[in-house]
Length: 162
Image 1 (spheres, rainbow, N blue to C red):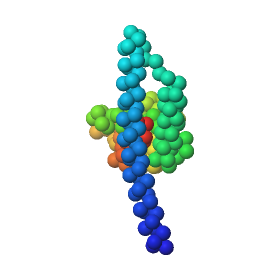
Image 2: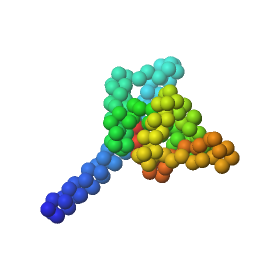
Image 3: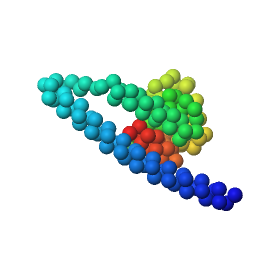
Image 4: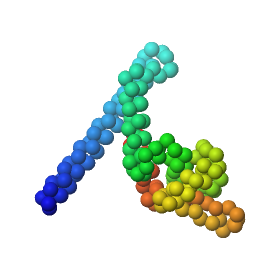
């Protein structure tokens, strides 16, 4: 049994290295394609960017794949198309920018009805992705903050969009 586990660990390490190499190559290819499109637009004297259908197909596949990856990261099918994902992105931006988000603002960030937003905030809190912090200056206002674990998961999910 130990031999099988060691083989599985080695196989995962190899796959992880290959995946990182694939991601780096894909990023370079994406940048090259972007520059090629810009050059095409400039050489035609046309400032509009013309995107080939194949590029749109590739982009659609990336978006689809990134959504599934976010669902996996947060261990919830449909997470990436729920208000929870929008709330997490909003809280991530706030944290990185040094801003605070109130419960009301978090619900607005989720682009949903306040009652729906409140339910999703409870789900995210139960998942230990966010925390509620009482505002010391205003006892009626509660601040929502992304946890360290939530921050890491959002960053991993964002990278899958590249």
